[in-house]
Image 1 (cartoon, one colour):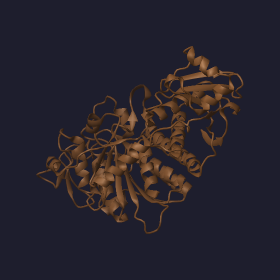
Image 2 (cartoon, rainbow, N blue to C red; image 1 turned 180 degrees about the horizontal axis):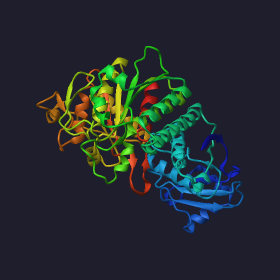
Image 3 (cartoon, helix red, strand yellow; image 1 turned 45 degrees about the horizontal axis):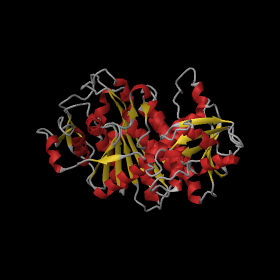
Image 4 (cartoon, rainbow, N blue to C red; image 1 turned 90 degrees about the vertical axis):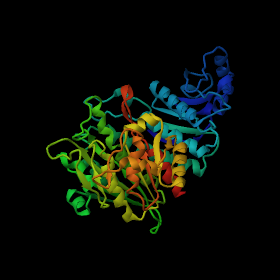
Length: 495
């Protein structure tokens, strides 16, 4: 979907569809008011008859409105004018674009940037409108023998209509929204691909492709490289798989040479059977999404590079499969991490932390300004926060607040969780420096406490996306989260 922005009058826009807004009580947003005035009160008459709904997200498609150049006028409900929210804004944009696509129109003019939201600038509304547009247009049918013709018949072009000349900030937001949309789409594609396609080798090839397209350095380490580095914890996870592991290093250098980079570390388990601690068969197919942390790192690096942000960012992706076999790591085995700390593996299904800990040690060599790891780490986080918020843990309160604020601005929210030393007691081991699980109580917290032992030399945060990385059921598929959060965090740092 292509987006552009143009100063244009709603009543004179020659478009297959124009999209205007209406609040509760029949009050029209500026573009709708212009349409109503030009059509001699046509919209007002419809509202009085009860034919226009102002409920947030409700859409009414009108054809051949008198004295209006557009073929269709779509009136979308904006809810109460007194309490506009970012969620309501995004929902209205999504509903309107879906309604427009359902008419068969190939292009539409959307007057959404005039819909105010408290604390959200016109540029930010522009970015959100474009990002939502890309989300509504997303389809994953690349593995089907017959493509989704309904999806292909949707909107191809969206013009953001505005009564004022677009500012430089608004024009920049248009580009940023498109870059963000592309980054989210990449993360979704990688998550939705089956594990027989999206292998560690495939992920590495995609990272190299992005690096080549945007001219930044990508290094891929193989098993021998990892053995030389002493990544015994990471390699213990891949022992049962025939697929070779990969460690991907992506270095985007958009900032000053001496600027310390932000390091993003993404868990890349391309399929997780649980290993010897085998998972139940039900819904195990969804374990292809266990590389969603890795996908979010690739998606974020793609978005950041497309925006040409003046910041240094390093992406680290430890990626492998977790499979059972005669060579697989067994419960009770003790492994040595790259940091030299030893780990008693009590449960081979707690494998994400075993690959992340070596990546966190590797991150030290970049002298990072901050490190954020992203992982579908614990079912316990799903129990704690459901599928709404990502779990946020950090060894620095300022960093946690910065990430949470970026998530709120991106509508990709994270919720702070405790990381107190009291919980460290649960992962003590009589045979090694630590155990890889701490029992059922506070499972997401003890997992974060495990990782914290490898992140003492820099500001660090951990995002547990087990509940937010994908959806199950009828709408099954990757969400692309937390690419919006991470990208917004980096945009703010770059600014």
